[in-house]
Image (cartoon, rainbow, N blue to C red; front, side, top):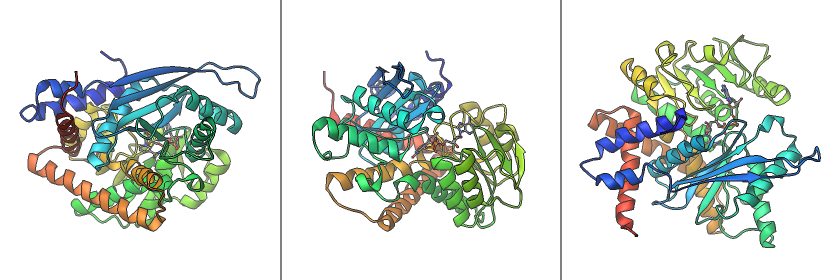
Length: 419
Ligand code: NAD
């Protein structure tokens, strides 16, 4: 039993899907997918700028690698737990399978507050994590990427720490994705998740016969995913009326000036205090009038308490696990169209796969090529999930899970059983 709500929800979603697949696969095989393959807890002891040696906990989880090496980002928050990382690793297994990349699911967590760490201390901590997790990080074992609280710069330091320890100028093969382009990263990776959110939102609007041009959008989270999704949706003609982050939220029914807001956030490190708009709590923002709501912050934001009050017609899950199963049931009854996380935010891992193949083959891709392939893949998988949802009369989340879990189960069967 677990007491972590994200893990409980991930398991509840899996169990529902396993019931749908009972006739297709043996029960033991389905059970095998429920548990992670390996969960490690690390103690890091970096010496930070205050001259003290700090004890910092970190986690690495490999959920399943039937389809390939584990893939999944590094989350750095003050309250990340091993169970949360396990839930996220499990979601990565389904996401990679659904979007059709040859990776399994993994995830890491570092228990620290990135907002409180000066840049040099963050670099020290990332290098300390790389050293502690070195047996996990390898192109054929686990390939990390950015997640909440980590970014491109951190991924560059991971690559540098590994090549330094090998005594080489660089690494051969792809050890980490989401790196700076100059260090073998791929143009368009940073924007890929947010762009994928916008692409699937546009597809959902089309499916529902609605016009994205002029449609009102609220985005929770103005980090890597939320900020890019907001800009990409605005580029497609939508009107972004509300943005929130961990410190507060701003709402303006006439539309927010995203360039001015981004400049404000660069200076103040928050949307709070932005002058043009009505200020409110992040919780209130979720229930304000809009056609599209993009939760792009953290898990468990749409719950049974607020699901009945949400006014959006479409929820595009930029974040991982933002909606609880109870909230899902309420939204389904109310006819809200949910683009599930394993589909909606899979653009990041798809472009990570392009970065992986580019680095493995020592090729170079242009941003235009990356964008075209991202667009095609997101649209194709969206259509596949939609078709399954219609044929099997399932909500989008269940349809996406059905396709993903079936694909992993098929790979496990193809491997056969080792003692
Ligand atoms: P980030 O650290 O760049 O930004 C997170 C944003 O969310 C910040 O604006 C922060 O203030 C806000 N936030 C955090 N907690 C909040 C709360 N309780 N209420 C309101 N706002 C809050 O992180 P990111 O990389 O943009 O990731 C956001 C979400 O997207 C996470 O759930 C992550 O797992 C998911 N995701 C990220 C990627 C990626 O490529 N970065 C890929 C797939 C999924």
